[in-house]
Amino acid sequence: MAQIGELIRYEINTAKAIEGKKWSEAKYLLRSILNKATDSCKHTCQLLEVMVLDNPSDLTDPISFTTKVQNQFIEQPDFLFWRGRVLIYNG
Image 1 (cartoon, rainbow, N blue to C red):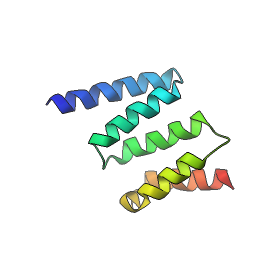
Image 2 (tube, rainbow, N blue to C red):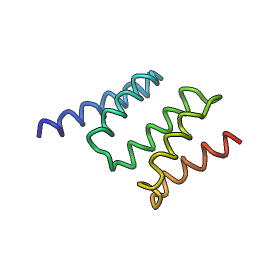
Image 3 (tube, rainbow, N blue to C red):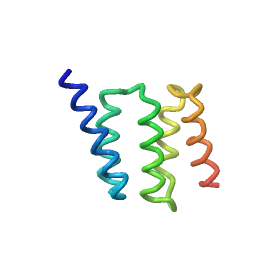
């Protein structure tokens, strides 16, 4: 129960960080969530979105991240949307 409470706090703080456009904080919190909830496609996609918003002119990190986790989420439409999006934006 303690871990679930911690994840809920991370998720609430992530939403606040995104709302305040604090991209580095949001990335840290989302990575913390993904360290415990490794199969969360929702948080993986949120992390990708924050990575793009943090530095839209350099998509090296989001592309590298999607390449690393693509086998895990290859059948998830939300992940495929973000993977395709970063690849297209990158040219």
